View 1 (cartoon, rainbow, N blue to C red):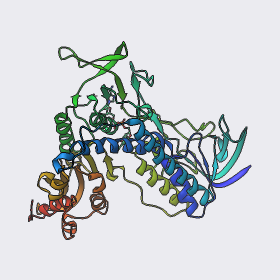
View 2 (view 1 turned 90 degrees about the vertical axis):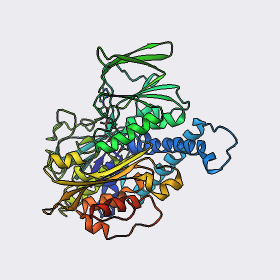
View 3 (view 1 turned 30 degrees about the vertical axis):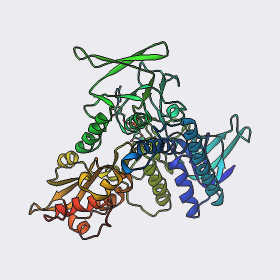
View 4 (view 1 turned 90 degrees about the horizontal axis):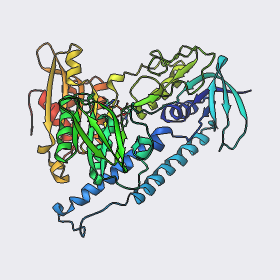
Length: 473
Ligand code: NAD
């Protein structure tokens, strides 16, 4: 039986991060992946979604080019098959790069389905398409479960890949659908609604909760909703849907309840109602690994399952389902098994980035969550409409909001949350994230210089105004 210091089951961001980081720490690592290294993020998630969103963004920019005096020779159009090829080439480069990184660090990759049984023994079964046959048996001192998640649907909406799709299928479209219903107004729903609207679809978002982006600060969600409305995206919140009626290539969805009932006829339904953890994908028969009622693998603060020496990371545990959280968890478990006692990860302060137009980026507590947690808060918001760089790039919709804890004198002290919506905020969150996680105060941050002219000056202005004095804002 082959032995490794660590065997990781699942080669998405959580699993490959554990493998790469473990190998870089000198561990002998085996990585079992049944499909493609890189997982959902690389093949049907973050990377392809942002690539198509970039196509949408470029089309929007070209449509607005005449405002800058740039003549584009008529109404621009998009050929999605070209964009799909570009997406393919980005994925291929990253995929090859990941394979090289793993082999360069001496990680042994097993291309099959891994099942964990008792005594840290993992059986790898090689299926069709694998370059090996039969099974291998591996034993490891530590095992990391990183089996990820898959899109879920709801009753009445069987995913057929034609009329009803999830992110798995939507990210491969080569034609822009004329009319689309997006069910779910979370991160995926808002990104897809924004992308399809920019590409020319008529989009309706149907969200069960009273607000879209319900987990974001209410002011941020309101900016996105207003912007969507201005762009002609129909957003219906607080609505339930329980099925659709296909006819002649399109389908009709009834939503709302009497007397406030509506219907919408569309050519495509996009399900964006969350992702289901693949808790039992690694067998686990004869182990003490527990799966909770929602399908997540149960872990403690060290990400250890009920089976000693077996960790779980990424979408399969109930921490935020984000690739960068999975990276952090993958590194955390390596440090933990090496006895380095890493600081536990706090799900409440991880960075969030949503690549819709306008973009959303935040870290830390929303104003409502801070108040609910018992903090006295001082809050300041500044809008991009007054920011020089935002005017220059022609994208002034949005704002930065900073939530700080009030000191005994009522002055703003520690920064609890930073919430951004607007141009390129996903690239501006860094200093807000550090402020929250370094437990910086408003005075600490205000003492630093923001380069001019930049979009990030708005974060500086917002923090500066919390000191009680201000410059432009
Ligand atoms: P989500 O949980 O963030 O949002 C799903 C939304 O669907 C919720 O608002 C929910 O109220 C709504 N919903 C559920 N059932 C419904 C119904 N029957 N009718 C109408 N609405 C309904 O999930 P998601 O947007 O699918 O994303 C899945 C995961 O992937 C999330 O954890 C998300 O954060 C993550 N993700 C993040 C990003 C990003 O941060 N850029 C991008 C993609 C995915």
